[in-house]
Length: 125
Length: 154
Image (cartoon, rainbow over all chains, first blue to last red; front, top):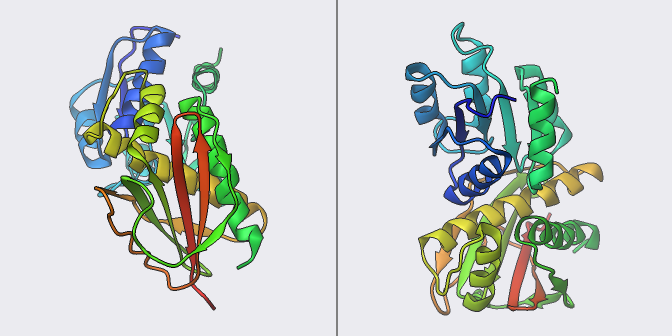
């Protein structure tokens, strides 16, 4: 994994953004930005070069799933790796996310090791 | 109320706190709660929508949640503030999600609303669901908290 890649964390709870950011920093990433809703995240994605999105599902305005669908419909964004980090862990949720093209799926609660393993899978390591 | 609807919330609470905040929580004996004054100083409340609608809350004493969030974020807190309020919302969200996953596995599907957080001594928790309010007290090394689960009666 390229540790200089630019990562966008999207979650409406600052607590979760902090936890995920701390784990990413422990792994060695330093180029990390945040958004607290899907709408803001999409604006960032259109104006900035983002290499990886880690996104919650259940958010006000634009949900993580809707954000993923919008990215997949955009030729500039469709190939950006998208990792869903969510408390939505029912089978139907995972099926919907996979059908929408999610790169991988992390269920809250999670450990630092889980994030590290899923990132390796996303980047084929 | 069917115990199989309650147990997932107990298991989810223990699992979320252990995984995210490295805190061991031990459940006490469930009881029927009659009044809506919270047992704690800060509460997260979330509505569940399904075949039977439900409402779930988790109410922490100040000492307990300050320690839990300090452990969760790796920073020392000494009193309630916006960071702790936000963390209670996310803990409520995670416990609801984990419990809904377990309920899904036994055939009950629920969607969840966005959690709300209430702060203050003797605040009131208004469950949207109209049914018996089952309270489960928990103890940790740093204090106590209570979850309340309320399913609509059919």
